[in-house]
Length: 125
Length: 201
Ligand SMILES: Nc1nc2c(ncn2[C@@H]2O[C@H](COP(=O)(O)OP(=O)(O)O)[C@@H](O)[C@H]2O)c(=O)[nH]1
Ligand SMILES: [Mg+2]
Image (cartoon, rainbow over the protein chains, first blue to last red):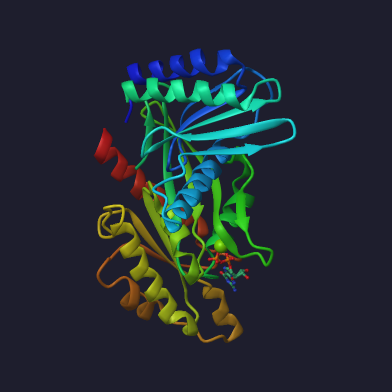
C-alpha cells in the first residue's frame, strides 16, 4: 500500500516526464489490474477501469508466453494504432506503466521518457 | 490483495467467480450486469471465443458506495473453465480478495466440480493464499434443471463433495433465471469487506 507522500510523488513524476512531453494518457497500475495513478492531458476520455483490467491480462499473458519460450520476461510491449499507440513497460515485478500517445510524438521519445520515469519511480517505491 | 488508495480515497476489491467450464460463471455476471445497471459505470468486458466460451476472463466493476470515507469498487472476474486454460485461470486469480465457487449440480458434472475445486486450492497456493482463509462462497447452480427431470445432485451431496471441510456459506442457485445470484454476490461482498477491514483498519 502506498502512502500519500508516495502517491503525490508518483503523480509528479508522471506529469513531469510524460504528460508534459506530450503523452496523452498515463496509467500506473499493479499487475492485478488496479490503477494506482491515472493522468491525462484532458483529451478524449475512455474507460480506464476496464482498460487496466485488460492491460494486466495482456501483460500477464505475454509474460507467461515469455516463460514458455525461455525468456525471463518481455519487459515492454508496444501496440500501434492508426491514430494512437500504447506502450506498456514493467516498473518492477508488481507494477506496470502504460503510456498512450498520438502520432505527434515518436516512439523513440516515448521510450526515452518512460525509461527515465521508471528509474525515478523505482527510487521512491 | 485489495488496493487501497489513500490519496483518491478509493478501495478496489477483486472477486473471482471460479468453477468448472459451463457451470454458469459468465451467466452470473450477465445477470448482475443486467439488473444492477445503476451501480455499474462501464460495459462488461468479455474475452471469449467465437463459440461463446470464456477465453480469458469476464470483467465487471461494481460500485458498493462508501465505507469509512472510501469509495469502494468491487471488480468481478470470471475465469475460463475449460481444463486446458489453467495458466490463464491462475493469472486471473492474481490479487484475488474473495471467491465464488460456481458448481454445476448436474449429475454428470460431479467429478468436474471436485477437480475444479482441487485445482483452485492448488492455484491459490501459488500465490501463498489458503483456501481455508480466503473469503469463499459456494454456489450450486442450475437447480432449475430439476423441473426438466434432468438428473441433478442433491445439496446434501454437493455439500459433502465440496464443502464438508471448507464449511463456507452455500447457495442453491439458478443463474439463468437469476435465482440466488444476488444473495450469493452480497454474501461474498460482505465476507470480503469484513476480511479487508480486519486486515487494514
Ligand atoms: N438451466 C440452466 N442453465 C444455465 C444456468 N446457468 C448457466 N446456464 C447455461 O449453461 C451454459 C454455460 O454457462 P456459462 O455462464 O457460459 O458458464 P461458464 O463457463 O461457467 O462461464 C450456458 O448455456 C448457460 O445458459 C442455470 O442456472 N440453469
Ligand atoms: Mg464463462
